[in-house]
Image 1 (cartoon, rainbow, N blue to C red):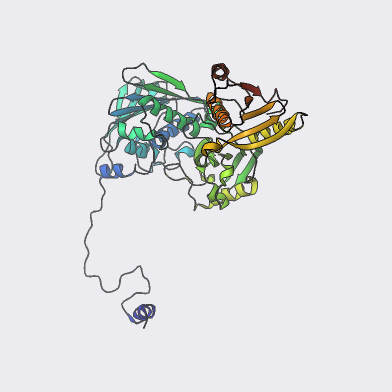
Image 2: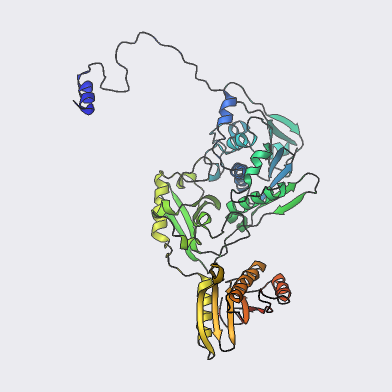
Length: 513
């Protein structure tokens, strides 16, 4: 008898197995009371383990601030202050919102009684963030002031340690406004270890980052996550960075937005219902330029391409392409970006998000309805799509080919063949008077572009086919590029022949960029 038949026979012949498998068989002869009451401290320590970066936890505090400001008329400011304490960082978030009327609910895990906007979907953000940032060594303080508090010239505060279930927390009332910067609002201060704060540095950055650089990385995260909110201009976010032995610096964040290669396809605002109620969808998509100034976002690589979905301007998830379209984005389309912003006031209308608010719940029916909407309305990029730079070089090649003294046109020509380097020249134009090579950039040029052109120029010289002229062409040449050209033209190539570098623009060639 095989194992399947044996098990089936066992179940069929055992009279003790009840028909309702959730009811025990036999006569109950006693019971024991179990004590499974969790420790409030242990519970608090356990809830903060889902973030992958301090930025996500800090954004939870900013979410609460933005939500409170929106409930207080929709205009206001959030100030984030970061203070270097050596082996720790003090993080303070100030807002001009309504204040917290029920501190007990605000400090109850999954307590949503005080939810003001869809940003407060889970009722976990504040507690999760405090748990993650301060870990076992709890140092945090919450101060809040409502209109009623302001009228009575007071504010209320709650401080570490967190207590629940087996202990109770107490809210103290103090005269004045404490650290609250406006008539009403909330201030949250929490101490984070320097080791944890250093994980703000992207994994792609190998060099150790100092405190100022870490603050820069956080500012980029905030400018990206709240880009659509910052672009509206009603809510501002400022960051104060206080290094040891250095004066404070203040930066008011500007929206971090993509640089579109061409005007994106922008759909009209569209009403939609994904199964939970009415909301509005804003959508645009197209190809972006690779932004090398950013540490993480809009770099034109696989990690920063695909889809970007927001709720009321706040980014929830990015990437997503394969989840929505069922296939990976082709590497040639790494600069494709679709931005979808869901707008509405009823939280139930939005697809469910993970408790860390960095992803949508894929199994939620509203999420799947959103994905279907995207598939129906966003045109997928074509894998063979030619870049703007390539198209411009093509136009230049056509123009040069039509000139009477042109002997040969070559694109992606190899150079440094004598050592097998095979560098690729964007455009080679051979004429009766000599050869010209081009290094092309669709937009503004940089100093390193000249050095790239110098590499190709040296390669041509070493291959025995020297360039009479080496042209860097782009939309515009910054001052430092113009200065560098003069310096390079005072030098010689490896064969001893003087360089002849030239700067040109697409407009000078009669080509629209």
